[in-house]
Length: 80
Image 1 (cartoon, rainbow, N blue to C red):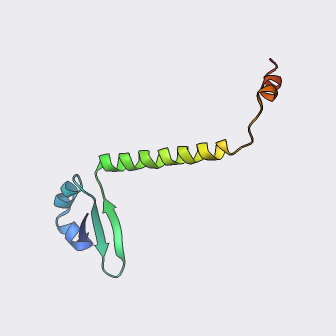
Image 2: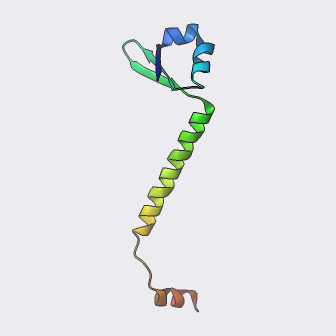
Image 3: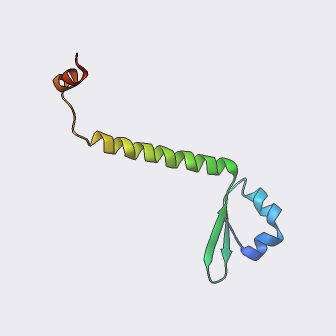
C-alpha cells in the first residue's frame, strides 16, 4: 500500500488517484496518523460485496441456531 501525507496528496492528487487503481493509497496527517484510504471503485465494490456476504453468513448461522421444528409439527402447522 502506498502511503502519502495529506499535503503530498493535495499536490499530486491525480497521480495518487491513478495509483489507487492499482493499490490502495493511504493518506496520513501529522499528529493524527492515518486519515483516509483511497481505493479504486472496483476494490470498493468487492469489499462491500464481501462485507454483505459475511453479514448473510452470520445471519444464516444465527437462524440455524433457532430450535428446529419436527416434521410432524410442520405438517400440523401447515394443515397438511
